[in-house]
Image (tube, rainbow, N blue to C red; front, side):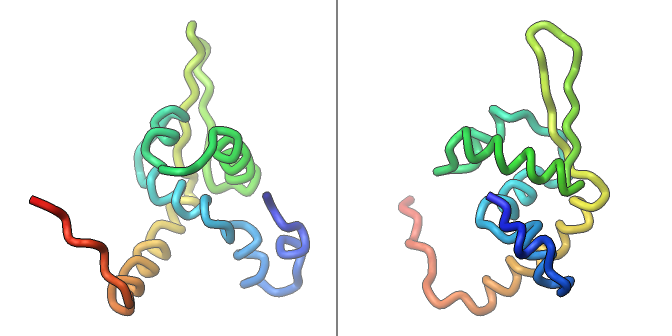
Length: 114
């Protein structure tokens, strides 16, 4: 859920965090990357997110101009999502965050069994 106090702040950093600051939005953006993707695919790829929360997050990302929703007039109806120019511009920032985490991560992932 969006925190309007953050989104309406005078500070540009605080407003940015208000737009992308919860745990799900960066994950959704990262999973989408440069491809078009359907709701069911996102639901299957992202673990531990409820369909309700995914729906809310997609709506907020669309309202904030980070993704675009395409509804095709077909039977059955088909909806796809893809990142907008603004959303695509966020991908390098996510890559920097991943690199930072890999460099400074304290605990390592458990070893995979062969």
